[in-house]
Image 1 (cartoon, each protein chain N blue to C red):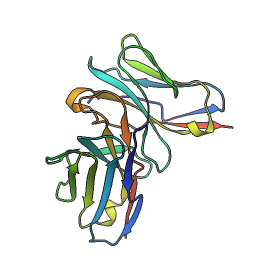
Image 2 (cartoon, one colour):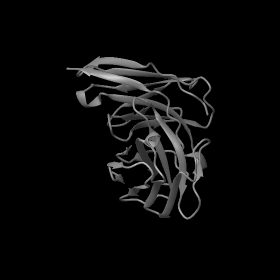
Image 3 (cartoon, chains in turn green, purple):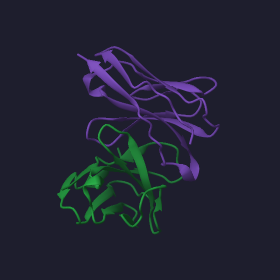
Length: 117
Length: 112
């Protein structure tokens, strides 16, 4: 089956630094990927839609200058948390659809746990 | 976005069937019903989806009410590995596909 992979799975950084998380679709091309964040014992919240070759679309309340998204190729989207602070500590998850305009299965990455000290 | 309502938690015994309900009274005609599940510290995993007719796959069955205002995910024989948070999500097709709004889900506990 299709696989979406995230890297790193865990990262610890100091406050004020930037952290990049990669999301790759391993065996299919994804023109659109999605980034979610999840706090402990809470549900997933959609942060943004990552579009290959164009700017990301952010959900209301998500700071686009804080969470930089780049979708440079059909198999890779990156999320950079800039000037990270402890409140940015969370579980970040990406997803991708095998086909655009589809209605079927979405594939999620394993998630990346960010801890900001 | 149309919302779904699920029980906060359910319990089952191993090898018994599990019926996970979901209410979605404001569903629109183009909304698909998706079910995903999430194990601790992992990304969600697709379970099943459907529009109007009941659906079966190797993981589960999805029973959709005739008026589409509710649905039930059926795990035919629960195993310990089925213990997870199950999310019932309404999703549009077309250009909105993939933008899923997750609710709180149902925490399924499976007892040996």
